[in-house]
Image (cartoon, rainbow, N blue to C red):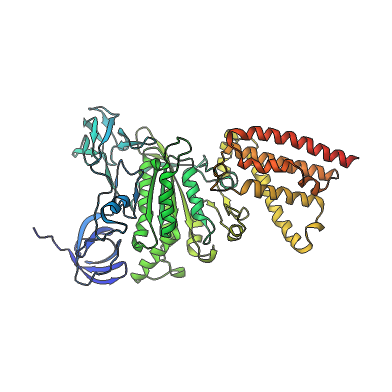
Length: 591
């Protein structure tokens, strides 16, 4: 039987193809173009004429080539096997493609997103004859040793469970049958979902619990909530990717979705090489057992960048609906916005600021709003969350450009990366004077209950010292350090300790790469306790140079290199040494 040709190509402009003859087509229908069957998506309709963004290289296409409408929107295959996988922007498994076709993806190559041969052990949690409704968990599959995959009743399906089977099944097999008003509905281990349609939820909850990351500057000064959203803007080389990789490794979440959107190939190669070898700090299992990687490098077709962000957030929503806390890392949304700009230009749309399309702000807001802490649709009202962390790469580090500004309007945490800090080898190079978090007040009760009653006060005190240091540095540049009064020298000494002994953190050191919130509290309280003693000693006549030369300062510096189980013992020793050494100074001053 001959394949019906829906339309033909009229014009080709890079990744955008204009086709005519597409009768009955709808927006976002997926089409196949040319002899190779390149994958595309309809993004503009004028009668039977369509603008199509193509997710593969259009080299070799010519006017007159056939266009076949699949009548389906761009959708993902969701089911067991997503975790541990590495996909491109339209959910093609890169590891499988490499085994079958080499290091480069063949154009028009269609392949199943999930392994259709692998059999999964399905354990029913419902019994035949029970009434079920959307979101009900029919059963579980142990997807990895870390994550149980919950098979849920699809949205819009409600009725009586007439069949459910225990045993081993592939993702294509039926495991349950539900009788509803319209007939019988078969439920398998996998389902499909349109990437541009957010999965519905019952209601959103306020973000009151922090996403602990083990990164001191983030957890202490600029925390993000579970279900919150954060932006990391920064110029080239300031550490956006390393910061996001640290969050992926150490964040207190159940599932990680890492989207490398338009980043350099060597950076993504490092991610793909290192992630499978990383160990989950809590379970000591491989981190990939709770991770999905989506790799769409800068040399891949530009339109697939635009899809990769939606692919990532749809997978995150799927695991959120199971009741998990998901962290989504998007690196970087600037490359995604550049893809929007290029496609908009090819469609000859009216450009907005700096050539970006006028709808840039709306698209960014729609993406970040798909995060959040929510009560999912289910009879038992499960709670899940998606925390979205988006990197932004403003040209020349200019935060006034449209992508940064539109991102800051919708995100509540701003981690401002500073090239001058990076050039001084201060990492993570997050500027503590320009960064902010709007979640601190909402999470203050959690910190008081789970860390220490004085935690918020300690944080405020440390930030005030750093702010005071910034003001004093301007005076130092005018009159020199020696001309400062002794109390101001003491402030600079304490600020230097906060910066060097607390805020600086090595991502590559086995101990310093992660700091628990309890260790953070211990470190900060001791640094500030030393600062208070220094202020008191200077008031009683001591010199700032005397205090800064105390031996106990070396032990304070050592705290970040000290293992969690040994740090309390060191802290006790530091407190004893502080009492003794400050006592000696005050004795010398008195005599």
